[in-house]
Length: 103
Image (cartoon, rainbow, N blue to C red; front, side, top):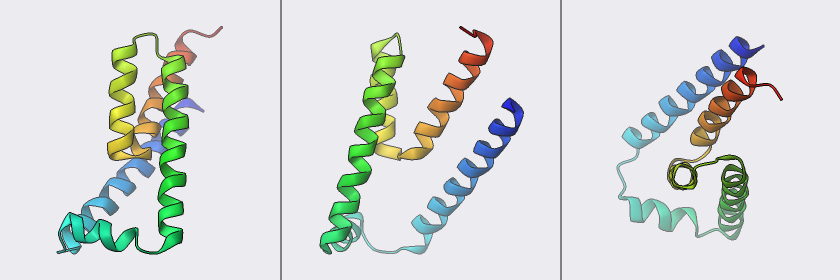
């Protein structure tokens, strides 16, 4: 199961990274133009707030699980900047730790 999860999440992360790189290269607008157009529709703003609320909830969970708070803060900063790809990486590292040290 562990190898299956690592390969599966690795493929998902690589696919997401490839999609993000494609989008970055395909869009010629400036970042401010992209953001202005993105939050103009009300539901886009609601979806963005929902996404970041989820990031903050995940960040609270990370802080509750990480024994070293500076490392937890680094994970949270990366999560807020790079999104769920970071959450997947954190979950994989925690999974590896939990299978090495079962309670």
